[in-house]
Image (cartoon, rainbow, N blue to C red):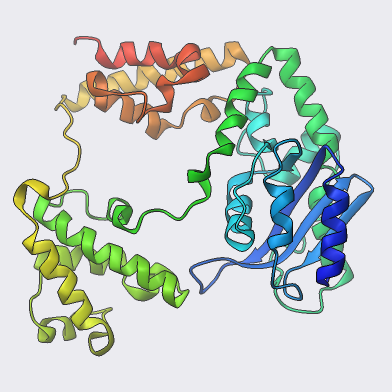
Length: 369
């Protein structure tokens, strides 16, 4: 285990001499807003693997030059979550990512495979997954736990080579390069704007513009509080409570005291303040859900079914995993937006997805019935 700042600096110096480094993290995420990092794994080669003790080393910023080096490929499986955690702990926005899960989708393999499944299907290695419930911030870690963590990175260089070869054989190298380039966007790893969180609140789909205005203010407050307290959002206010407040718009602390899930003595005045702000927003500035043309539900389902069938057919012909090209929800969204669909809002209308099937699906969506 790398457990001193000096040892970490020496490891990073060695890693900076490589062209590819496999990366993984082990963390716990139970009662906190941000995950608690326990171990970072680096594999400079299949026989040169290291575990960084993030409990012993609080300052992980020395990893930043490695994570943001434009000429060193970082190999990960299902990369965004790990890289988001590393961005939070190192300050670095990662570059030059090779996501094996992404590559699998373009190599005629499942893009939803776990790492264990991918290793089995590419190089025939079976991982022992008995330590999946490990508390990675507890010390000491057992030999079995350490071996488990090493296994998650020591085969990644070999897997990358296999996936690159398969993608080349299918003739999709350019598509893979296009897809991997999207991992360089800093927005993938940044915290979401608190004032956009209302769009993710469950149960608010039928809210009026005024209710959305109140919901936006209170949900933004909840987000700030969850980060400040380092607690899950639901420990501050649940989505159900947010929707209730947006609909009822209570004006007095007595009303909040009777509302389940609110600590009125601690949070009541601040919640009431956010509700008042939402009520004072001019009508024409209240947020609204995008208006979509109303179609007969039978028409929607018919177009959706035809679109899904066409997606599967074209993906099969191209030897690409259909769910990797687009999820059912993405196809439905395109059908609903129809003529109003824009490339900025629909990745099916951008890049290789547009060329493969997106243009066809847009044609189905906009076809007169």
